[in-house]
Image (tube, rainbow, N blue to C red):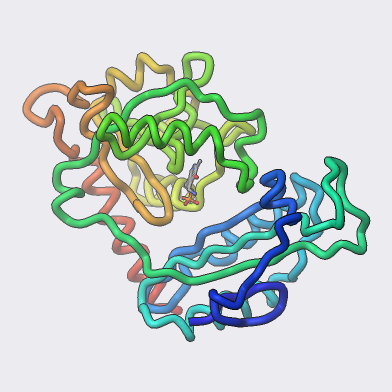
Amino acid sequence: DPVYLNGRFLPLAAAGISPLDRGFLYGDGVYELIPVYSRRPFRLDEHLTRLQATLAGIKLTNPLDLAGWKAVVEQLIVTAPWDDQSIYLQVTRGADNKRDHPFPPPTVPPTVFAFASPLVTTPAEVRATGVAAITVTDQRWARCDLKVISLLANILARQQAVEANCAEALLIRDGYLKEGAASNIFVVKGGVLLAPPKTQLMLPGITYDVVIELAKSGGQPLEIREISENELRGADEVWMTSSTKEILAITTLDGQPVGNGPNAGRPGPLGEQMWQWYQDFKNTVMRKG
Ligand code: PMP
């Protein structure tokens, strides 16, 4: 199945990028990941809007307009062999003929890459038990709202989680929970859903927005505010959300069961409810087309 590179669809093996590409040299670029269900992209406009915001945030002109991106995404979806996919988009500041930190001259075109892969979903038995996570100090820069490809701090945090046999690392900055290494985090306490606010220290997740919409329309008590590390540790439920994980319960945190009483260490009722709302919402949207 073909990939998209700089205006052309071609086999992956034929897709080449200069070693002087600023994505390779500096991590100077941005990306998006769009889930596709039954060959229909989910929340495509929202993903493309976030891409535009990230490009503006790093002062890189969007190489394609909305219709252009949609055509690329649609072409990848129809030629891929899978019904459920994830579409990855990346734009870098291109390849100059030398290595130098400042932006290259405007004559240097950006590198634009996109490809489809099968959507990797969470098996039902993993959803039933939930997953384990660790907390780590957030060592990222101060513009975590931008979806940039320089992911070193996220990678180190995620690797630390893997080495502790955990699925995710929760990032704590100055005593407050920001998000996961590759997910947003929600907390339930006393029947209230808590969500960290969108600041420059958190990626504005597309799934995060859907969850908040569903909480509001379902009458679920919701507070969008900073969550302290202590509140996280005293939570009844903790969930991670992302385009590929959807809503997934974190049932063990730093080796301790999440929650109290008979439900301790098990996925809680509000998380189950939200997962169901999310599935219903997805199915409704997909039917409408
Ligand atoms: N935060 C970070 C740091 C992420 O990498 C991701 C997933 N790409 C998310 C949150 C979740 O975002 P979304 O719901 O848009 O997938």
